[in-house]
Amino acid sequence: MTKIGIFPGSFDPFTKGHENIVERFLPLFDQIIIGVGGNTSKSYYYKPESRIKHIESIFENEPKISVEQYQGLTVSFCKEKKAQYLLRGLRTTTDFNYEKSIALMNKELEGVETLFLMTDEGLSHISSTIIREVAKNNGDISPFVTKPNELIIQ
Image 1 (cartoon, rainbow, N blue to C red):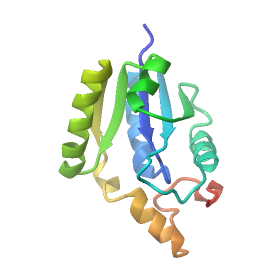
Image 2 (cartoon, rainbow, N blue to C red):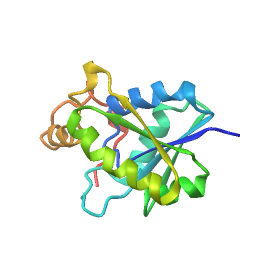
Image 3 (cartoon, rainbow, N blue to C red):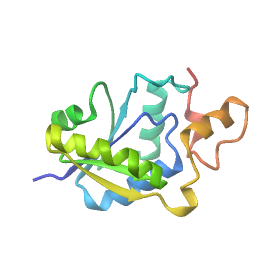
């Protein structure tokens, strides 16, 4: 059986912290799908197509990784892709408390297991929200985002 994991998020933008989580999960899976989803409670800074192309360019030499956009519940996307695992990165205990409830709900809804990895300490301060603020104010986001010049603003 092929082990498939889905790493979901809005990735506005995809940070070096996200990249670190994917790279560390990679040896455990036959395939990782980075799912670029939409959250109805968020407004986005970068275009969805730009976010997808950006992530694809980061992992262009890794055949086990694909990037797909999806709508709706993440567990429904997992079921559609026959993925057995959801992959999540945690920066803080606050992240864990939030993600734990979602993981339990996903397990109950579709039987999908959620696996957590702590973000490497040197990257745990990186937040897409803060990076967007830096970018909006013409700051340099290159220390936090690989290939930032490929991102296109909405």
